[in-house]
Image (tube, rainbow, N blue to C red; front, side, top):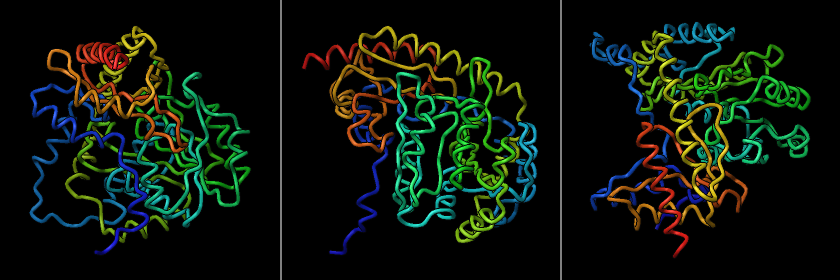
Length: 397
């Protein structure tokens, strides 16, 4: 029988999606499942984006340019200028989601065996992208005790070797909801400049900053023109996860020319989705004001309810729409599966993402879960109650 590759066997399962079969079985049994496991917003997609698809007059669904349509990239550059980041459309490559943007970035700056330093916990698919690219993730640990703040510079420098090519951050963070301050970004800038590294920033949650805080892009650091690479996406900003449109943004011309070769190899990003994404850029600020108000309310509700549960530890997220909760159990993977297979409250249960999959250090995060607060407040209150009752029952086993 033909054999599967070593790389294929090494590809990790998604902690976000691996429990889906158990959730589907629960639903077939008549159990209602509250999905706290995945960042699929229930916020409506801007109507202007949907109308752009409905009302287009294309009679041939043709390829676009490999770097994305020029009209769309010019509008993306305008969007960045509104956020005090000066780039041109030539500094932008449109990709099939932020995932492809990161894969193109890894392929452009790293060879097999090279290393990328990432503060953990981090977005679980970074592990998968790294495995697919043949590179090594070197984690630098952040802690729930200080809200997952940026580790000290010294901790980064201890890990830098001749194989280190980049530092990767997600800001605001998935799965922690941590928002790096301007001062923390400047500290990272010092490190990458000193050691001649790339600083890759996944900034797909840029708009989602709370409590009067503002997001500070790595592209706002003028001395990082050759070092900074931004990964972006329409998925969460406009509640358009299914569009699968992202982009790479960088002022490093050699890097962008290299990334374009990867883009050319897959021909072009999807045309219809670019049309919708271009239209979404006309979304008024009032949309984001309403969304931020809603997510702030949801965050406050969830954190308040979680802190009522004995033994649960949780930091208050400052951005995105996730939090990490530490539970008074030993194995969150087992607990998450048990929730779907064996537990319900009046026909209701919850689906969470075990947090161990958001770490690359073995044995870390085993008693933690990631929760996405993408449900209405009343559903979050119900979900927190189910979690409370589940922990009581689970610990009696």
